[in-house]
Length: 113
Image (cartoon, rainbow, N blue to C red; front, side, top):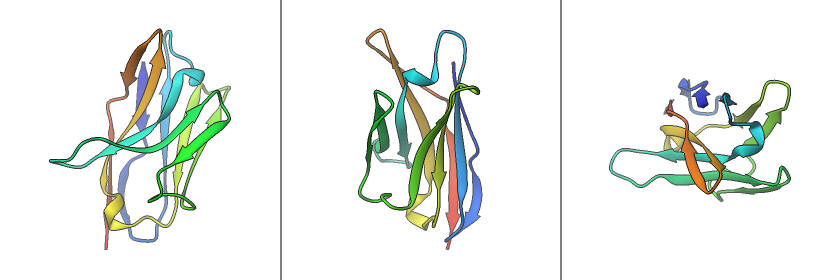
């Protein structure tokens, strides 16, 4: 019900745009943020969005990442600019509905130095 895509391999300084498409009973309004995870580490917050307007970015991505949405496509995007090797991770979008968390399947982002 949440389909993440858009990851890939990019050089440092490059850009990628991730997409999280909601389907079925999920809506873009249920998507509450992006997280990322590297092997051996806990999943960490990248950005959260609440009520469509309250946005909080992790300090490590402020000024470089931007969350947006396309209502018609029922999709939330994460535009990532000026990527750094430390941004390398599997990125997950997270949804929340009826007191349950929902996760997309993850998309790999690899930034080479």
